[in-house]
Image 1 (tube, one colour):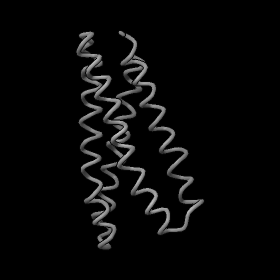
Image 2 (cartoon, one colour):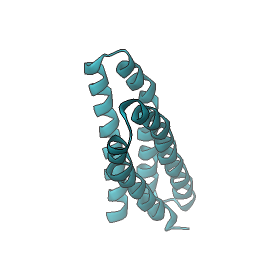
Image 3 (cartoon, rainbow, N blue to C red):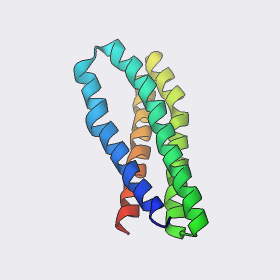
Image 4 (cartoon, rainbow, N blue to C red):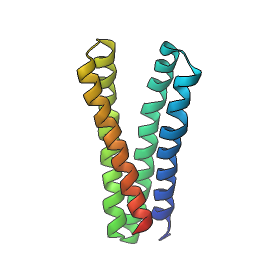
Length: 127
């Protein structure tokens, strides 16, 4: 039971790397502009829901096992995933309305939140 948060840290790192290094770049080479947009608008909410769900499970286990480090990492993972999920409608609306400056800022925020999740969970594996 004590290793479950560590296992979930590894799963979270794997999901983030797979999504950012394999799925997202492949979409732009395999699909036309409107098709890639539809696909990404379907995948990214699910991506952040999955990250949040992994964080919730890790947090519950960490609380039960009283693993303070894992409580902090998993709690922060949940918070960042929820915040990134909540940015999606604003990001999509900015893109749809042609507000590129707003879109770029919101997209950058989403990327930074994802990087934060990645680094938190790498830290959970290493320390």
